[in-house]
Image (tube, rainbow, N blue to C red):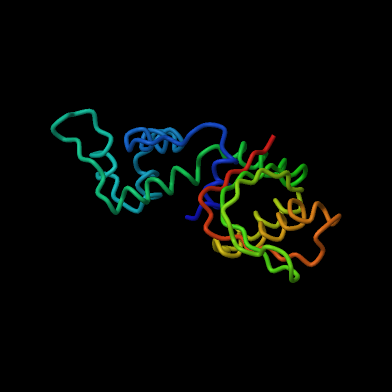
Length: 185
């Protein structure tokens, strides 16, 4: 998962996802009405394995192996705050969002301008159309590169060309993303 994908995920949550394995397993059990059978079906393991992971008996308790830790994390992320995520996504698509980034920006510009790429901190309001395009690309399985192109086009229009008022013909190159955060208010 790239920086842009992580930033989108953080923006859709209002509370942090459980970080310890025990808390994640307790969350999965609570979301499946305490049924170890249903949690086992979701994780692709036996019911007895889940029971060993969550038992309170000290000698019988086992911790999940490395290959199961990833499936537990994915199951928790898929079920964490679904209504809040849907509401925040709809809000971003309707009203837009604020994009915060530190990345390398370069330009393909007419002669006489400085087109050397350099690292910049940028905070910019972006419209709901950009949010819709980003979420649609993410839902279609687009990678970090395709999401970077969407954001470069949006930042080029809003930040560098000031919504079409200056620097016509300026093409933005957006790379080396150090972080990408989205604020949905």
